[in-house]
Length: 145
Image (cartoon, rainbow, N blue to C red; front, top):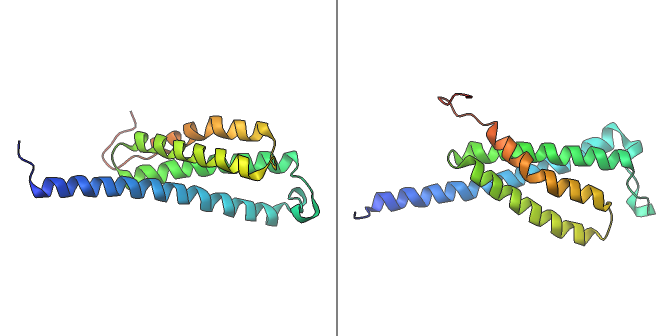
């Protein structure tokens, strides 16, 4: 079967849309994580340590930041699915894998700023949260079941 020029163009646009979906999903997670830390500083400044004075994060901040990171992953999965509009779960899993790799690099760059259990929980729950977020996206015309 000959490949017509418009078929190739459509495939290229689909690939570009998928790459864009992953990039926007990741940026969504980053922005939400940074905003949530800023909101925590405003709402509950007593749980945010002064890192310049050598204070370490307490349990309340660690749990709060873990929850916000996982919620950001859910929203990132939803945004990825919304932009991709095809292969939503595969792209969400790819985004989750990328986020896991970046978090592993971050763990080594932080030199133990957060305890190991925090990183392990994040790495275990990150991909399922992103994929769950992608499953929340329902384009018009698709039923829940």
